[in-house]
Length: 152
Picture 1 (tube, rainbow, N blue to C red):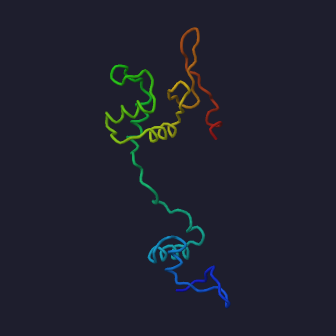
Picture 2 (picture 1 turned 60 degrees about the vertical axis):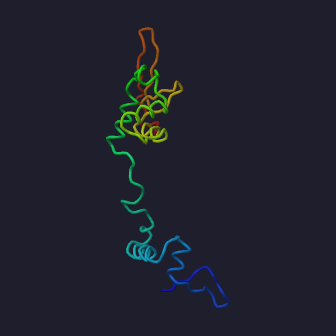
Picture 3 (picture 1 turned 180 degrees about the horizontal axis):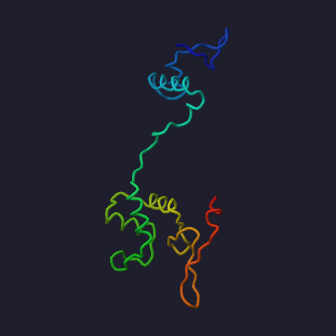
């Protein structure tokens, strides 16, 4: 099969083999090029969207992600964890000792942000839309009812 390409000579566009075009355009061999062409012929431009099931598999399961969130929500034990508040590195150390030996700080940050928490100036994690305020009666948690609208 020959397709016209951007290369031209005195007679017009120079035909190129499909294999060469697939390699130049997509960096793939003929078999993958045939798959792309066949998908395009079946679905038109919709074939250019990424199909379901593609992409990297999740590294951590839902239960492991829930474990990260649960650990961040509990108060650290000052004696065993050596801190009064969680930082990303202390959370990482605690989770690695427990049951997630390869978890990194960027993964912890992403999981907590996906769960609706944000990193506070005081180096603690709080659910987005909530804040702890000191009152005469003690510390109270204030909730912003418009959080979802503000998050977009």
